[in-house]
Length: 155
Image (cartoon, rainbow, N blue to C red; front, side, top):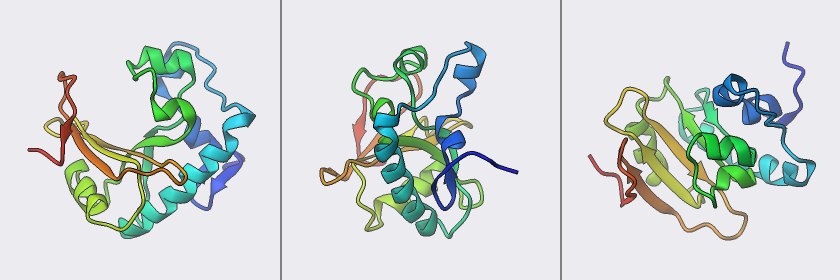
């Protein structure tokens, strides 16, 4: 039984803050109360993503990142993960990261950034971020081992 508080109907605080890297390095990745509103908004937007992906379960592989965790995983200093405004996701029942990114880019969902990450690897994922009232609908691709973000969905 999941006793973690729900941030939205399908997403809990536990899954939003879970991190294998935090567990490995014994990092406390608890969400500050001051960011609870951002986390709830992000998860409310994820409900729209879930619906767009055929109501299939979404796996959050990275949500909130405390500053130490963000540094440990090589996140950017201004990362929306560190503001509880972004998640990295997979949705295996819907398809590959590329298929997910294409569906979301073509949707009417108001996102800030949609990034297809490491698309040519087995572990590819989709980063999606939400900024209340300030979404850019920026679509990017970032290849593994490359620091460059390319505009659009690239092969």
